[in-house]
Length: 459
Image (cartoon, rainbow, N blue to C red; front, side):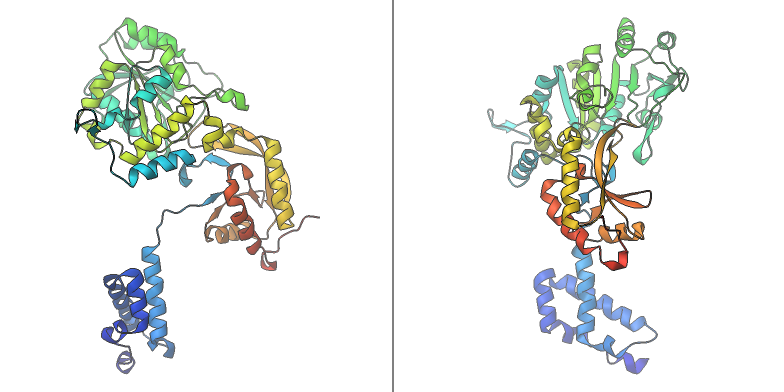
């Protein structure tokens, strides 16, 4: 073994080679040196070495492989062929071209994030997007944080620390990542006053709870589950009217926060931001990257005196949004001001796509590939929005011998293709595939379907 180790080239000889010079040009000397040493250390710890292990070619192949792995980002674009529009694991809402351009422009230059051009002095980042939100929703004031969970935490911390907050047991929900409404309320310092039962709550339950001093009534929208059967909850306006009789504000956590009525697309009604404000809610919170279709953000709307207090809380600085988020959110909101959300924002483009349009695309895919079957199916909204709600769609169904292995190979492509399996068939839903991705998708699929997969051709 000792004699074998003496045949391993020295670091100096390797660094002076043409191969090393080329790698240093691409990756930098420090990283090349670190990877070379790592490769040589691995060779020295092996019990047996093949003749090829001593060659510079082998050593630099291993070194380059390590460098490529180090320099390859783990956050990359994928083709979403699952039919899940707001796929949380795949980044939720894709952004409009205008939104992307705004974020790129602001991110690549100096900007007025906290600068007042009129006075030539320091300004406030909290003004960005606020005027548009006020104009769009009619709210007295608004502020932005980095996500909706932060928005809820900030509101409760600002308005109910060490104070009682009334909430129905029907709304003590848990969403993705273990985020539980009771936990975040406790973290804020608020004291929970639970009322009603897991399936029913009445207005009298709220009235009884308010006989004792309380800071807030909170409602959390059932964004990712449904309670069915013997159920009841008071109307939101009734809750607000009662709360205001006692001088208590109401916070409504809408989650998805749609500004568009979903009924027009054949879906059940999703409560809108406008409806909450019109019902008399004092503070509304919702996400920027769900049905709004913008970048990740938490939006807080409502009464100016309460928003002013929220803005001044120390936590507000810790969870504030950055310049690119504010630029992107502003651009997304402008789509709504211009009444062009359904034709500009990808989420609404996908929701509004008709089954006929999708059927034609799926058949074009089938014709190009020369195999597969176009079948009826359902697309999902996803992202913790509208539980159980689906849209009619058509999918290209591929009969392959080993669907799991096929999808694994698809995920290793560049860009990766993410699809789903149903009844031992690989399903590809055109609803969530951008037209600009279709050529890549089809060429990649064709490369994955040699005889080894034993696919079943269409007649």
